[in-house]
Every structure is written in structure tokens, then in C-alpha cells.
Image (cartoon, rainbow, N blue to C red; front, side, top):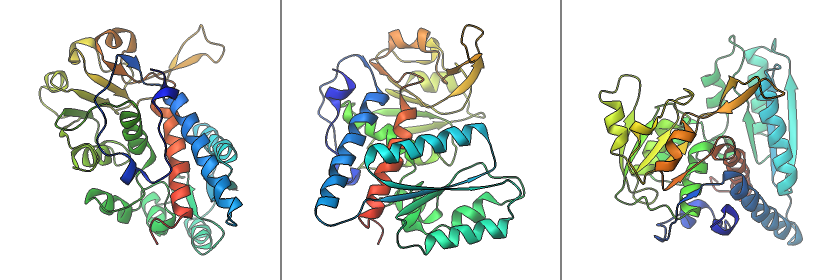
Length: 317
């Protein structure tokens, strides 16, 4: 089954779509690139329907401070995704000497702009700006990144909320590839606020994963043994090729969130992207695995588009 064949409709928000999967799975690569393309096509069709009914296209704004290469690429891809989905997009660029007060004013202006449905402030920010203060200044109903404490809190108790894009993307891949999660043992490598913690919360919730969840980190005892017991292993620690074959249970589903640039003289760029999983060694053991690149990465921006669509439809209002 290809990623395109596995894709299903996103006509409604994932809270209603992603219940429990049908157990009908064969060994395969989980193709995030193809799945993201299918979802963006579905979003575009819904936007066209909204416009045909007299509505307007969703509007996503992005605030970019400074000239960080990774941030520039990520924001550029978000603008391209907006175009693919039929959204209106606005990019607000500022030099890295902008003051915290000035940036907070930008956030306030976007909060009060009725034409902007959702917006993101691209991280990281310069060291003289308090990232948490900026995040908390964004209205929860426009926080399509899902980083505001209100959205995190609502998500953690199962209320409608904007869920951060990477965990939502992982859940979407699991559902679209019919990976059974109910009652399964899930090990999550990493406890970041953006991936590890929300992923653990979602996987244990009845309406999402309904799984038995273990969170592993740098101070976990018997880490390899804990990984070997997992039916689903989610690696999100930012350590290239950390997960080796001896850490994976035969038949497990492995989700690789890591994307680290490692030197590669054979590439014109001089580097290649390496996930947290040693793909060549681990993949023969798996029932399913995400590649890097082309796995979780494309889904992250796609889920930002889905959150923006829901913001335009008034999810949090």
C-alpha cells in the first residue's frame, strides 16, 4: 500500500477523524511526503468550497526575526505550503536587533487583526528576547503552532485545542497507515515541550492513542531494554543514528523525528540529513518505519496548514 493509497479524508478536524484504526497493515515505509501532499490537496479542495460559498481563504502570518538558515528555509516552505493549500500568507521579517517590546507589539497587532486567522513566531529568537513571553502573548485561538500554555493544557485533558504540528503529524501518519495503537506499548525517546511531552500525552489519551506510554530520556535506566519492549518506538532526541538494531523489537513500528545535518563528502551540499534511527540497520526489523527525509518532516508543515484551516473555521472561538 502506498502513502497515497493509505490517505483518507480530512474534511473534519482530527478529533473526530482519528479514532481507532482498522487492523489491516502490511510491512511498508511510512511515506510522509506522499501523505502530506494528499492532505494538502484535501485542504485545498475544502478552501475552494469555502470560497465558492462566499467565504474567504484562511490567512496565515509568519514572523521571522534575523537570518537563521534553518528558520529561513522552514518559513519559506510554510509560504509554499500556503500557496498549495489556497491560503493567503503574510511574511513579516525583522532584523535580529528588534527589541522584545517591539516584537510583542507585532504580536499584539496580529492578535487584533481580524483578517489573520493564525500566526507563528518562528523560533529560535535572539537571546535578548524571552521566547516564552512571546509565545504566551499570542492569543490561544490564533496559536496555530500549539505552543501556548492554554492549548497545551486543553490538549492534555482532551479538550479541542491546537496541537503542535509534529505530534499531530505523527498521529496522522499512524492513523492513515492503520497502525494499531490501542493497548500497545509506546516508547518515546525525548521529553521536549514540542514533541516528547505532547506526544506522550496524546498517545495515552483514550480518544487518541489509548496506549501504554513510557517516556525515555538521558537519565533513564535500562534505556535500550525499554525500547526493545515497545510495539511503537518514537525517536525524538536529535542524536544521529542513536537507535540501533539491538534496541528494536522485531515487528515494531518506528517513527523517526530526528533531522540532523551530518557531513557527507559525496553530496554536493557536503551534508545529508540523518535521523535519530540507524535506518539501514533497523528497517529490516520493522513492520513499518518513517524515513529521513520524507517521513515526519513533511507532515509538520502540513499539520500547520490543518491548524490554520481550523482556526479560520473558529475551532477555539
